[in-house]
Length: 338
Image (cartoon, rainbow, N blue to C red; front, side, top):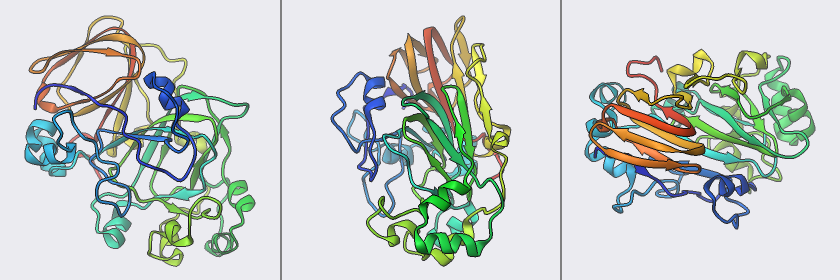
């Protein structure tokens, strides 16, 4: 495979409302009340499921099957040396039509021990739209809390205490939030993000009441006593994990804080002149305008607002041109510390 491929929407069912902003970006009808996530170039399934979440290519194959059959072409030989046939990345459009529950994700080491997975779930949010009177996010505890306090909150489902203990940060387009494994967090209603994450679906949800069917869905079958061992209960300065880029100009704007580079890379591309891009497996999300992506071995692809595109490594050197703005998402560089 050498040509970049446009991908249709891929919205597996979720427990929370949203999806209107995804439909608006794509120029589609918004008839999905519970379609708040669009999984782009996904080789990942929803937790415990066999197919939901996987991207299907125009030729009928699952992307996961295509990459597994020819990982060097899709990912590059150096990537394969580091990550085998995993893309090491999942990209989503996430439109919070209601506040998400307080939850957190496991680290690589915790995921290996309890979920038999090489990857945990570190993630980042690139805010590309907001709506409502007070769009905000909740990353990390304001002050260090004890394990016994958190355990009590979880047993009693004390939502007010859980949410009140988190940082509360208003956001606007151009703000980008890094969420390392273990950090408790929630996304507020009216926040629309491009999310980069490790390629798993491990969410440990401590605020499960009124969101999930049962506490078992919150701890993913390992019990809260075990799950809470992965929670970071220390105080976090939110400004240490936020990069605000809304006022930054330039053809290439790096979007994420430096610590995130070990897990994924993201930049905003707005070519003031034809922009040369090195070969890489990448996912493009076109936010506005229209233009052209030309690749060394994959020809020419017209791009417009709402397009989502997967680019294989074998496409080679690329050139982006036109009056458009796109987010380019890439896995960590080969050899990154995980």
